[in-house]
Every structure is written in C-alpha cells, then in structure tokens.
Image (cartoon, rainbow, N blue to C red; front, top):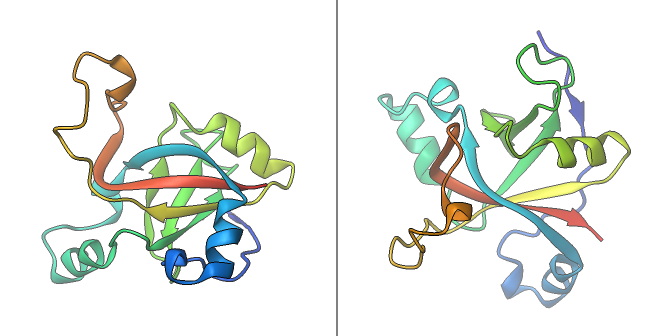
Length: 148
C-alpha cells in the first residue's frame, strides 16, 4: 500500500463567512487552483447507498484533505483528495498537480474546500481555459488554497 505524507491541519475553516476570525484567516490564504476530482469513479461507488450519501455530504464549504502520494506508480506528483474522515475521493488531476506537489514537498500547507457546482450560463464556451482536462470530474468541484 502506498505511503502517504499527511499535512498538519490548523482549525477548520468551514463556513468561515459566519466566523469573523475564520474569515480573516481564510482571507490570508491564496487561491491556487479550482478543479474537479480525478478518478472519482474509481474511489466512490455512485450506485451504492454509501457512495450516494458520501457525494451528497460534499456540500459547498466542506473541507477536504490533501495528501502527497510520492510513491504512486502512475504519477510522481500525485496528490490524493480525501474527506476529513479519511475516505479517499480521488486525486488532483495529473495535468494540474505538479506545482502544488512541489510546494507540498518543501513544506507548504494547502487547504481544499468543495465549491458550488459550476453554472453553465457563466462559462464562456469559446475560452479553452474553461475546458476540463480529460481526468477531471466536476461532480465535486473544489478549490485549493495555500497558506500565505
């Protein structure tokens, strides 16, 4: 089994907009990536009650944990995405993970939170930056922040 490097996590910032101190702390973090979970279909069985319940629990603002997986056979920059209870959801896509992985390897701390589902009306279909990579699944969109 792969060995994962766990980051130390400070106090939760869920729903930080209701807590002024948490909001200020979240404001000191830098948004580095908005993406979807790669490999979600391999880690969560959407046909089971447990899988459907897990996906329904991932509401906007839910904190996710990120773990480096340097021994991953498929991607040397692999970053696993998990729930706060440790349930594996998938990975940050290999097309967008190298910079974050390198920063994690030198000790930078990252936080991730589930986002609102994207609004189809807001996307500019002609802008290639809005196209998901082949491995991204926007069923659970999330943002990654780096502590400032």
